[in-house]
Amino acid sequence: MKLSLVCSLLLASAYSASAQTAATLAAVGYTSPAPIPVVPGEVVTLFYRNVPPLPDGSLRTAAANTVPLPTVLAGLSVHVSQPPVNFPIFAVRQENDCTDAQGNPANPSNPANPACLLTTLRVQVPFRLQVVKEMVLDVDGQASRSFALSQITDNAHVLTSCDLTWDTNWFSSCSRVAFHGDGTQITGKSPARPGETIVVYLWGLGQTSPIVPSGEPSPPGVVLDQFPGVPGVRARFLDGPTILTDIPAFYSPEDAVDPGSPIDFVGLTPGQIGLYQINVAIPQSLIPTTSCGDLIFGTTDKIPANAVLHITTLYSGTEELGFCLKP
Image 1 (cartoon, helix red, strand yellow):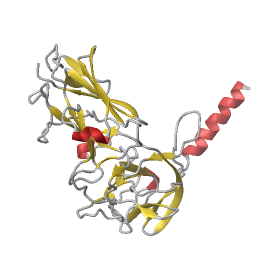
Image 2 (image 1 turned 90 degrees about the vertical axis):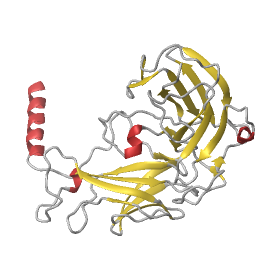
Image 3 (image 1 turned 90 degrees about the horizontal axis):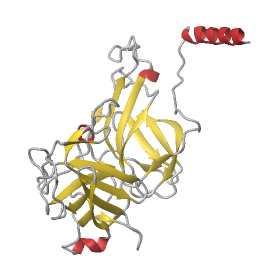
Image 4 (image 1 turned 45 degrees about the vertical axis):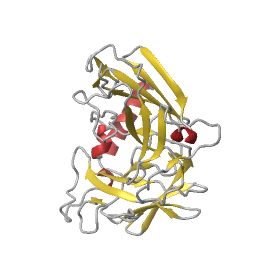
């Protein structure tokens, strides 16, 4: 029985090696893939397989240079149905990532196998979504199969150093970043100070008040919309790996008019598209016991830090951000 099974596997392997199909791996685990979670207003990257290059054989690569953002770029567009709503597109990138580099997209006589092309689109999920059921990619006017979606309240993602350059390589070392009030990044050479209000940028915090048209820059004063009595954002600081300094935990729109509130603003960044920010004051009592660099923070971030900020949202849970604080 064992010999027969081994022979069957060997024969199957030999057969599959003789030709290549367009099959792609959808997921790994013990259940079938769940519907894709989306949040109104979220900026996110979509990854597709089996999208062919442009008709002339060149790769689909383009970046939006106008506002409002276009809904068709490099021959691609994305929409949801019921009712049809188009996604604004920031950029499109297409690359051949097969290790055997099958085909040459620059040579129409030897085109790339579409299954080897990874096509990425950075898009904004429209704010005005109603009953979201499915998403469709249009390639040169031809619709793809539909992809199931599920709408959630938030999918908060603190921006990383890789997000700033749209580096989506899985092997890249990416660190969450925080900024001074003047827009410069907090670093070991430019640490934050106790009592300072720092800024953390995020995607995917959800609905705002007022609602900003999708694909357009936000005006000033657009705050996170929340259900009455339901906290949307929580922040707390840690000094090094052990000492915890709690600040009043939750943000509500009323906090924005209270100059003593540790979190004085959560909303869209003026002049940006789909970008949120949290302005949070570092407590005067938070005096680090170590110098920056004594703590290498995070299992993946691997950045020097001597303080940690926890950002917690209602649906997404907690993200940790290590940063340098002046002793």
